[in-house]
Structure formats: structure tokens, C-alpha cells
Image (cartoon, rainbow, N blue to C red; front, side, top):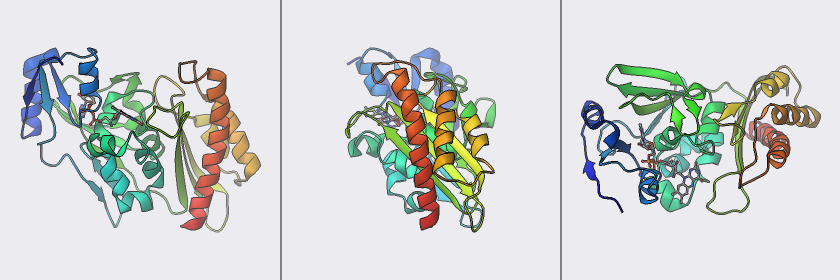
Length: 292
Ligand SMILES: Cc1cc2nc3c(=O)[nH]c(=O)nc-3n(C[C@H](O)[C@H](O)[C@H](O)COP(=O)(O)OP(=O)(O)OC[C@H]3O[C@@H](n4cnc5c(N)ncnc54)[C@H](O)[C@@H]3O)c2cc1C
């Protein structure tokens, strides 16, 4: 394996200035489950790996008990999210996703921030967070800024991050009462595998009924970047949610998707599965609202 220097900054400013100083030769590393694989495969050849692991304040899960807002540090591992009672209880759509990433060994080191910055269309963390209207906080030489996660991705492997910028935190706004969410990673077998599709649905219904007041339908591997099926969302809002309505929402989402053929699945199959999985996740949302 290619040799590189491993740098351990103790603050955000130190990390940013190290990457600024070394330019293209330096890369940040969090859990390293993407970076080290790429180095080994010769797809990346940095001279310096700048670790984010020893910078205080980049980890942790905080849910404000009064407002319900959730803040997740970028260095939080998938396993920490999976084991969090707050995430399981209040954000099951995110729990569905993180508890099925790689293996326990991978989840123990891989971070949610690394998953987003890696920006592959199949990133399991992105879809539920987009359905949850998450924003990301970024820190760089020009200071701090916030971006809606939906607009963070520019293309496969590309984000709005500028040279040296660090993703520090993920912010999830409070959810309205009577909201249910569900995510499914659709893969060929129940093993460590990248998804053929990722489908996340989040539905809010009015008090005492099933009329939908707010809908989010987010899709992964259905376009070059994770996307929202906006037409399907508009169709759902205002409707009384029954099997027929959910079926139609699935059909609309399938039409909207920009799926393509790949080694993992044909476009026609992906489109068909968007239809089926949006309906199934919609039903799961309703079941979860009923259980709450
Ligand atoms: C065996 C295996 C199975 C996997 N299974 C899945 C799966 O099922 N689903 C899935 O979505 N992914 C999967 N992955 C991919 C990977 O584990 C995840 O994308 C993981 O979350 C990446 O996080 P990391 O901390 O390891 O990132 P790293 O490898 O440390 O970094 C990834 C990229 O992000 C940059 N970076 C990291 N953190 C930051 C930050 N805070 N700010 C700025 N830049 C940053 C790095 O420079 C690098 O370019 C798998 C990987 C392996 C090896």
C-alpha cells in the first residue's frame, strides 16, 4: 500500500490550514472505510491524510428535548446512531438506514459525515436525512455556512464542499406530531452489499384521521444524486392515505425517477421497484404512526 503521512490536528482551524497548505496532496479522513479502500485500489494517492478524529466537538447525537431538533456530529459513527434510543424512537427512518450499512465492524468506524461527503448515489445515510429536511453545517477558511442536504450533492462523488471545507454537523428540524418514516435499502441479498435502490418515505397525517398534511419521498440510486420525488409528494399531500393513493404515489415517483442500467440492476427493474417500495414504505409509515 502506498505510504502517506498521517496528520492529527486538534482543532478545525488547524485541520483546514493543513489541507490548505498541502493542496491536492492532502485528504481528510474520518473512519477511513472509503478513503483507505480507494488508496489501496490506487484510485486515490494522497501524501497526507488529515485525521478529523481528534478534533473536539465533531461527534455526538443531541436531541433538544423541548424543540425536538436533532443535531448529529459529522464524526458520529453509524453504530452510534444505530444504538441511540433517541434515533430509534424519534427518527426510525434514519435508524432503518444506518443499521443496515456494511457490517457491525464497518458501522463501528464509518461515520455519517464520511458517508455524505463521499457522495456516491448509493449512500444509505443521505436518503433518510433528505426526507427529514436535514441541513449540513460546513466550516472552512471563509467561516461557517449551512446548506440544505438536498443541495449538498452536485453529482456522483461531487459536493458543494470547497477545498479544505469540513462537514461539521447535520441538523434535523423537529418533526410534526403524527409523523411516521421508513427507509429500505433494496439489495439482491441480505449481506454486505451496495443497494440497487434506496427508498425513504416520511408522512404526516392530521389529528384523528389519515389525511396527509406533509409528505417526503426520497430516492437513492435513482438519479446521479439522491433525489426527492416532488410530484409524488404533491400528489400525497391533502389526500386520505389508503392503498390506492399509496400505489399511485409509487407510480408517480417511478415516473419521476431518473434510474439507469448498471451492473447491479436494469433501469426497468429499478423503476418498477420504486413503485413497489414507495407504496410499501408508505404503509410502514402509517403503521408506525399508529404505534406511536
Ligand atoms: C465493506 C464495506 C461495506 C460498506 N457498506 C456500505 C453500505 O451498505 N452503505 C453505504 O452507504 N456505504 C457503505 N460503505 C461505504 C462507507 O463505509 C461509508 O460511506 C462510510 O460512512 C464512510 O465514512 P468514513 O468515515 O469511513 O469516511 P472516510 O473514508 O474517512 O471519508 C470518506 C470521504 O469523505 C471525506 N470526509 C470524511 N469526513 C469528512 C468531513 N467531516 N468533512 C469533510 N470531508 C470528510 C474524506 O476526505 C473522503 O473523501 C461500505 C464500505 C465498506 C468498506
